[in-house]
Image 1 (cartoon, helix red, strand yellow):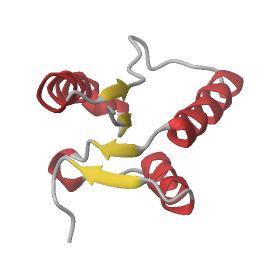
Image 2: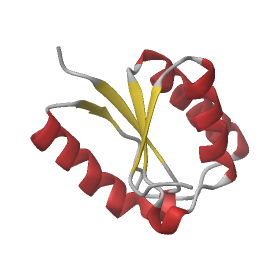
Image 3: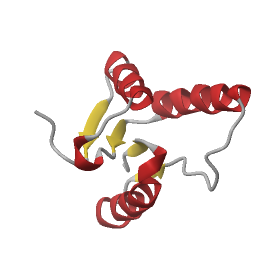
Length: 98
């Protein structure tokens, strides 16, 4: 069975997120859920909707894959990692963390 993985990370790394998603699908045959948008301008309400939906994506996934370029993990991504931990999801990182 194929593993379902949600990509998490800062939108400043959206190009890397797309690259990682493609690699995970082709090399690992993972089913990848990613959320990369062409705009960074969202209203507060839209941001909340997207955040709530992202937590649902984590909920239905087997794992999350954190795209932590230069080991950077922002506030939102930290919360997503905590949510994944609470749900007992596997957590994978682009770059190892100490």
